[in-house]
Length: 70
Image (cartoon, rainbow, N blue to C red; front, top):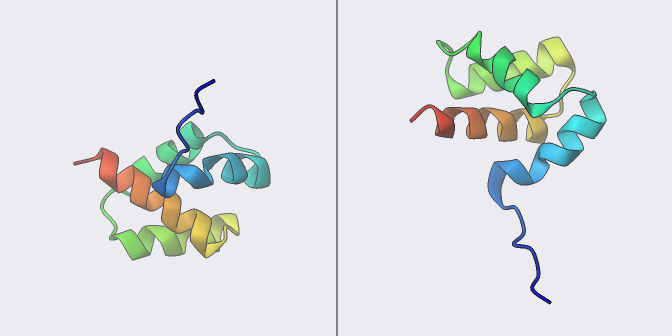
C-alpha cells in the first residue's frame, strides 16, 4: 500500500481555511484577484481586516496566489 504524498507549503492550510471561513479556495483566489495591485503584506492585511482571517491563513492564501501568478 502506497501512502498519498502529503501536501506541503501554503496549500497545506487549505482544508482548515475552507472549514474555518466557510468559503472555497477559489472564492479567496477571486478576492485576491481584486487586489492584485497590492503588495503581499497589503493583501494579507486586507484579508485580516476585512474578513477577520488569521495571519497564517491570510499569508498562506497570498503566498499561493502570488506563486500562481508567476
